[in-house]
Image (tube, rainbow, N blue to C red; front, side, top):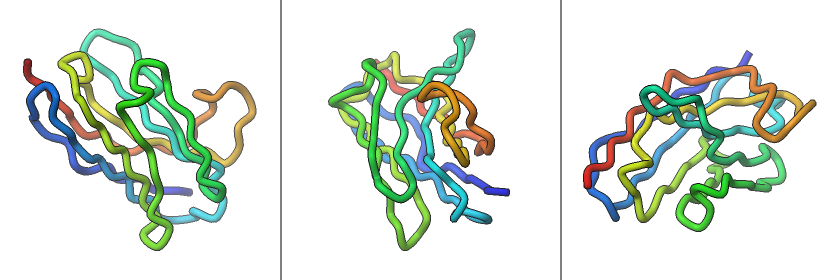
Length: 123
């Protein structure tokens, strides 16, 4: 099993930056990648991006590309989501998730999930 805990959410203004963390523990050696997702009220969960656990390869959704950056602090088993130029439409609960293998699409088959952290961007 892998346990994930997000932190760093809060209330910011449009144009501000915010950094989220996802601390992983447990059988992290089995992790293939960690993804970030978000879910706004009344909307489906949206894939934000991911980073492979060992190679550090990243990919992002078009809605955040160029504004959000995912990185990994190896010594701390922590994945960082740096969010710049935030917009009101970025308001959502942000969740990180991990999987041991990618069987299907880039945003499918995540097995382990954190509890989420709220990000609110005011206009």
